[in-house]
Length: 196
Image (cartoon, rainbow, N blue to C red):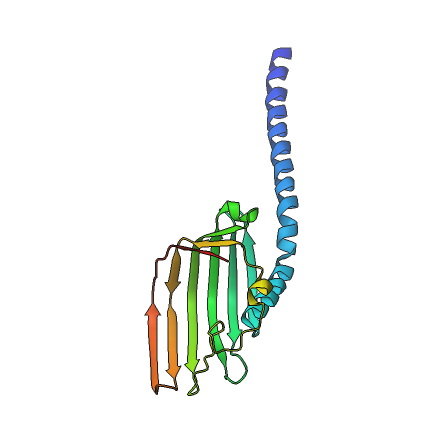
């Protein structure tokens, strides 16, 4: 009888040990990820602030999601960029923008974007009769000095792939009297690197 009692308690101990270790691992992971999830709202507000400072006009982000499960990634939803003063409406809006980052981007001054996916983008480019454009960064649009410093860009930026889905770009060139629109832009592969 004592032999029968030794078998079941040992397998019960193993199951209890496995369950305890699994629970401890789950609690450990939750402890690591909970601060990340809790800080999503502050990360969204900081991203809005930095993007607005870099572009010189208000930028809005409805939601921001950070993920580490399949590699570091950032997903922005409801991204809007206002036109600069003197232009009406929005410069652009994006339903969803996702950045898949290389793991090394978390600790180095080299930001490697494995994939940039843009879904539902709508960009409105305007050039006034005097040549002034609404696109931030053009020589004749009022871009604030120190734009790159405000953006806190990394020393090296590399983008391996850009994917566009359901994208529309409209142009109103008042200087040349031309209006145009490109719709349904589906994909644009790219590979490039820039030093800042």
